[in-house]
Length: 86
Image (tube, rainbow, N blue to C red; front, side):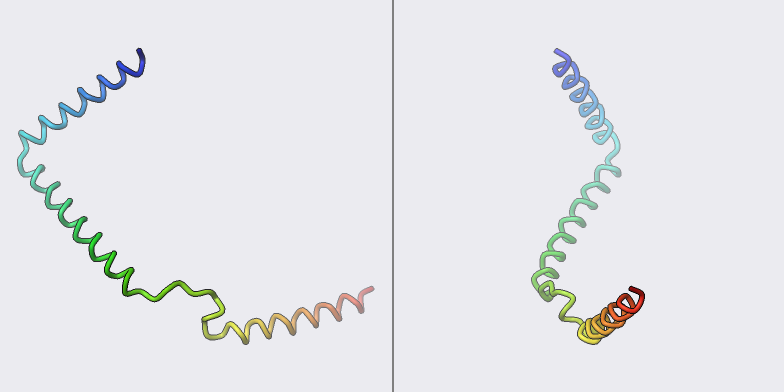
């Protein structure tokens, strides 16, 4: 029963909104313009995604290999320091 009342209230609210749009043609036109603009953006995004390069891992970036080498050297140094502290 509660769900039925809730649905009726939603229906009433939607009808009021619809009536408001019918009375305010400039607002209705603006929303239609925005909808067209969003559809155009969606088409452009799809085209951009097709043109974009595929995702790549961090390994593909310049400087990755030197960074890994530096980390490896630091791990060796830290390992030596830990052994000296023992």
